[in-house]
Figure (cartoon, rainbow, N blue to C red):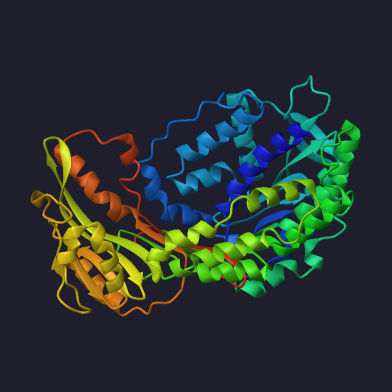
Length: 568
């Protein structure tokens, strides 16, 4: 059973990584989901044709300077089929800066749909091809290079290629299966441990008994989160837990029971006890699924923008309330920053929030042995001392930093900072009180007199900044913010920050413009005449702007991200 998990897991993770990069576009198409079972533990589907050629073109500059050192074919000797996939990966990476060539190589059109899901424990990955002959030619090339050859088989009238995953001496068999039917390529498995009917379903040679299209599961996700209907992804925690803790509660449970019976295994007996099934399903019902969807997608040859969200859903009102009270203020710095990060935390609520979560995790008292042991360990970690440690910073709502620009030069063979435009802010209900509390620990601060909106004080000497660096650091009080800044953009940001309302709006936010952030360092190395380090060479044309934020909402834990490639 462990071999099934390892073999299937590695290949399915590779499939998931591939599909995750394909996600998005404009109106739902049930054809993609027609044979996906409603009890799948995971789904990632591109429902409308994604402009893959334009997307690759918009990010082509990122790959032009990348080192194309091929991965050795024998990097994973424990998996006999791994050289085949390494060969395919190396071939694709070598042509990634030429979108037309790499797509033609795999028989893929300028746009494509795709899906990845499970039928019980059986992973399935599908994607559209318009030139199956080109796809098979690439597979043939990879077979010759890797030495991993297929066995030609026929499954219910469909020609398939089969590749053993386990060594021939193993008592069980697990084979990777690749097939093409009606313009869709499928990667899946067949095994002596799982009924062949499931492989037939994966290849669309048989219909699943409970297709997800006969439920409102996917449409409910679109409706609740207002995602575009281009693509959707989810992990169904309830289906996963039901499969692990019941004998026949869903397809996964039936397959695991069958495998356990064939192998005489009792590994899951404890988890499938009445107590564990009931209590673990209760937890899964409180945290039913993780969903991912697209909020915005714009793809052009020279520029792409993708904004998405991942939500870990929760029905646990007590924990969500505690997390919501814990988050603090995260400012908006706009597009001037080359790097920005904010941590929003309401320090005055840390103790009560952690205590509320700590208390909830011990209720009810579990009878399932692993859960009972977990509760005993939690009970020994009493968080009451946390209140004493955070008491001095009561009123603090967050801390943030923004680097807006910098200049470097060479001095004695080493980079030297000539200019730094940046800002560090502590946001609090009464920032002047915070300054007065800190002053006794650093006496020079006692000489600093600040008034809200008053003149900023030069504190460069207190920070012991070398004058040759040309950095003048000033400290100012603006509204609810104690701000340390330097540079012209830093001055403008101070005024902008003062106008922002102090509210509990987030937990973590980051932003980075790779081109602006790495540019000065690359310039100083090029001007020095020295060879560019390989780890920086790949960033030379890396024109990408990325932002990410984490917040706690009524829906659960939300992770938002936005990625922009190319010139605007």
